[in-house]
Length: 144
Image (tube, rainbow, N blue to C red; front, side, top):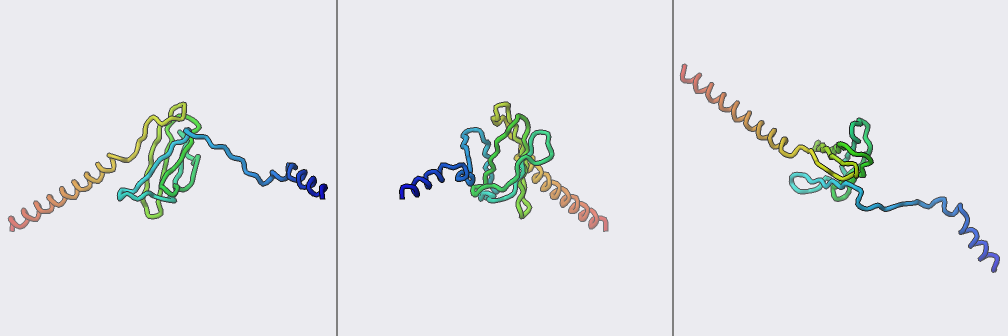
């Protein structure tokens, strides 16, 4: 019976027992976390994204946002990192994250104001075309 116990102990100490182990390390404070939200407040959960290194066209990281609509990135070099998020229903976002040599975020460039300006310009064009149409109709009726 003592031999059986000794064999079990020796078996557990053999390198083959560790063959199915998974190693891990946890490093805090080195990641950029981008939190995303739709305009109506809900986060885009499990949506596709791609991250591109500075001046590269092949994706460095691909995946899906987490259950809270976040993308986590650990930059390995300074420069402008691009994040592209696309949803199945056609929404999308592209951000540029400027990262310094210590992998710290310096600046974020995104659609923000330019998107609002484009919407306002579109409304202005429609109002202007409507005004021209009314002017033309009024002038056409007055000439008859």
